[in-house]
Every structure is written in structure tokens, then in C-alpha cells.
Amino acid sequence: MFRPLSLFVGLRYTGAKRSNHFISFISLVSMIGLTLGVAVLILVLSVMNGFDRELRQRILGMVPHATISQYRGEIDDWSGLIQQINSYPAIEGSAPYIDAQGMLTSRGVVRGVLVNGIEPEYEGAISIIKDHMTRGRLENLKSGEFGIILGDILARSLGAFEGDKVTLVLPEASISVAGVFPRLKRFTVVGTFKVGAELDANIAYIHINDAAKIKRIKDGVQGVRLKFDNLFDAPQGVRQIAGDLGENFRTSDWTRTHGNLFQAIQLEKKMIGLLLFIIVAVAAFNIVSTLVMVVTDKRSDIAILRTMGASSGTIMRTFIVQGGFIGVIGTLAGTLLGILLALTVTDLVAWVEQLFNIQFLSAEVYFISYLPSELRWPDVTTICLSSLVLSLLATIYPAYRASQTQPAEALRYE
Picture 1 (cartoon, rainbow, N blue to C red):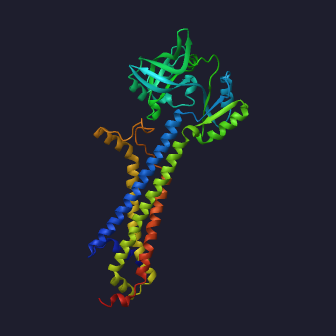
Picture 2: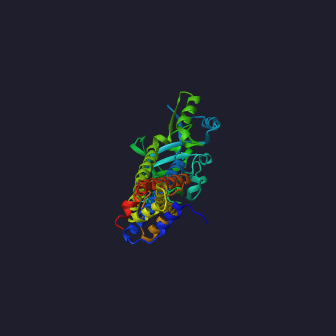
Picture 3: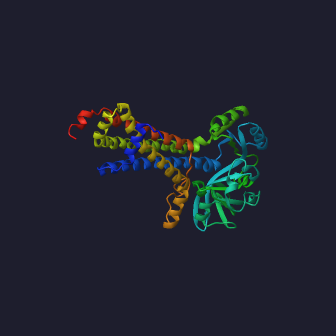
């Protein structure tokens, strides 16, 4: 079968045994370096993609995309307002709320908490809490029964689980003939939830009517929470809705509460990706030193080929083939290794944590308690193509140097 001379000789040089074992060692190191660089770049970007996904699905699945409330007083006709809001095409759902900040006490333990007063019938439209209940059900929150649902970490820190009593202390004061006392109320734990995020440690849910009673709200709710089909539409979308409703409404959205975290993850992904890309570039350009030594070692072979009629272009293509082969093998091996690691790193890290009884990510410090990973094929394609291009660029100088070898000069001392 006919094969071009440059391809035939280039592949022969790649697989041939060399008298200089150091060159073979450097070639192997170049290939391994490129493989590891590509694999680590795919793995790290996949982990950063995983953090990005978890932020969107878990944190922003529990935190509303936007809220609408009145500047003064409560919203009385909140059911009519919800129907009006849900008529907008960009809205996926909305629900009323009454919030309260306070402290929960149980068995002598005190924890700060944000209490969300919700209407269970509506909450499923804007929150993922129903899908993450570990004990009990969201429907266990019933008006007048003063039940409470705790985050998993919060429940364990208080030592309070289903059926236990906890006391909610609010910063508002109650004035009586005996003096001024903090406002407090006993609640019964009717369930716990776990989303694997920091919210497990500081969020609790009660029925919206119970929240109205302890907040001394006679009629209405504090505001309405909104969920958009596309969370990035929330800042502009909620302002448009509030503008249509009238001047008495104010808005807030997730970019004010968690936007910095999202931007930090995006920035870290870009910076880490850039640093690892530089490492891949260094590994790719190690091919330069490898080919320079190969050219020096093969000067007599090059001279013989030139005397047999091989053009300088043929010689140049020969060494481009050899260097390109190292780049292709290193890139493909790194891509396969990176894909394998990206698909298994979550389970692998969990296995290591269980084996050595350690925890790399704590939900009390980070917003999730495990290492996420999401493989995105556009990232893999970009990394693979970039590595191949860098590898080919790295072959140009030594290949050109080989093509300029003068036969007479190279064979003078042979």
C-alpha cells in the first residue's frame, strides 16, 4: 500500500529504537506531561462546572429567584397578585411568604435561624424542598398546629427530630404588666430536609398563618417569591413586573443575595482554566526539545534522504509527523483519562472519605458537602483541539531546522 514518504519515515522514527536512550526518555516524558495536563484540565473544569450546577439547582432551588413586596405594610390580596404574576410567560411559579429571623433553642442548645413562613400548597412551585425531605412531608405544616421543618444540620445540632419540641425566640419584644419579654413560641418538629448545602444549617419552615401570628400580622403577607424559567432573567424580569404592578412595590433578586458566589465560581473557573491551559502549553512545547534532539541525532539520516532526492519540504513534514504523533497520542490519552476521572471523581472522593473517615468539603463551611462534577462536551472539544494545535505548532521550529540540514556538512565526518 502506498504511503507518503514523510508519513512513512516519520512514523518509523517514532517507533524506532534509538541508540540515545535519553531522547526516548524525553519523548515519553513529553507525552506523559501532555496526557496529564489535558486530563487535569478536563477534570478541574468539570468540577467547576459541577459547582456551578449545584449553585443553580440546590442553592437557587431553595432561594427564590426574586421577591416582590410593598414599601409599606403587607400585601392583603396576595392570591390575586400571584394570579397576576403567574400570567407572565417568563414566570414558572410564585408563592407567598412571611420571614422571621430569630433563635431556636432545644436541650440547652441555641442556634440562629431564618424562619420561612410558607403556604405548602404554593411552595412546591418555587422550591425544591418537597423533593429533599428526609423525614416527614411538607404538607405536615398545618395552620394553627405550630409545626416546624428543620434543615438536617440544624436538627442534628439542636438534637431535635420529628416529634420533638423546639422554642423559637424572636428579637421583637412583648410588653406586659410584668415587664418586657422577648417574643417566643414552642413548635413541634414535623420533618427535616437535606439539600447538601449551607441552607441545611440555618433554615426552618413553618406555616404562613403561624408565622403571621407570631409576627403579629393580622391580614396579608410580607411578599411574594418568584421563580423564573431562566434564572438570569430574574433581575430585569422582576423589575418589569413590579413596574406594571405600580410604584408601591419593591423588588429583590438572587444576584443581590448569592450573585457574588456565582460570580466567584465563574471567575475561579476562568482563572484555573487559564493556569492549567498554560501547563498544557508547556507540556506541548516540550515536544520542541524532544524534536531538536531527534534532529541532531538523525542528521546523517536526513543527509542521506536529501542525497536520495528528498526535498526540504519532505524532511520538514517528516518531523512534523513525528512530533504530531506524540501530540495526538498524548492528547487522546489525556482526553480519555480526563473523561474517565470527570465521570467518576464524585464517587471516588466519597469512597476515599468513607475509607479514611474524613470529609473534604463540609456543608457548614462550603455550600455543598460533596465534590460535584459535570462533564461538558464543548469543554472537552475545546481542550482537545487546543492541545492538538499547540502540539503541531511546537513541531514547526525543529522540523524547519531539520529541513535546512546540508547533506555535505552532515556527512563530512561520517
